[in-house]
Length: 111
Length: 117
Image (cartoon, rainbow over all chains, first blue to last red; front, side, top):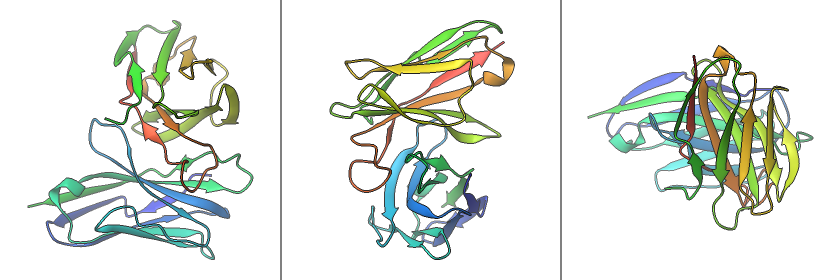
């Protein structure tokens, strides 16, 4: 089942912070975050596993709440280069480890 | 550049036709994944191969098939094409297939844009 992302879109000014949420109705094994710029391929950001939190980038971090089956991506002091669509992908137990992506959150950072 | 290559970049064909999309994974990666991306459906997982064997299947239509060859490149075959098959098709690769932890991060190729007229 497809995870639900919120918000669907967000507009920021450079330097502002943002939080993107991802939730699932299934028990999750891991949560993956990717960013896709317009016309390009998705790019891996980070993976969060049950029982752990992994920070993939300098000012981009994420958390994983196993009890709520939710993950949040935190972007601090946003830069113009952060603009793009952020996808969370979830892996559920018993899913043969296939990654199911949410519909994405469009982030626009303006000067 | 992710190191994953896909050909062709663009493909325009007619309904009812058959096409083959090709993907070469990053050097050393054993897993290959295929995804379909359309505006209304987002990134849909189609199928995964690991070292030549099918590992997981998603919402792949019966008209679609894929395989991974001994040299680890993969092909996605789409037949009896319909207008609704028009989409961007991505291939991704990873070292492993565990779904989490080191080695499971996926690297995406540039995609093949398929247009069915």
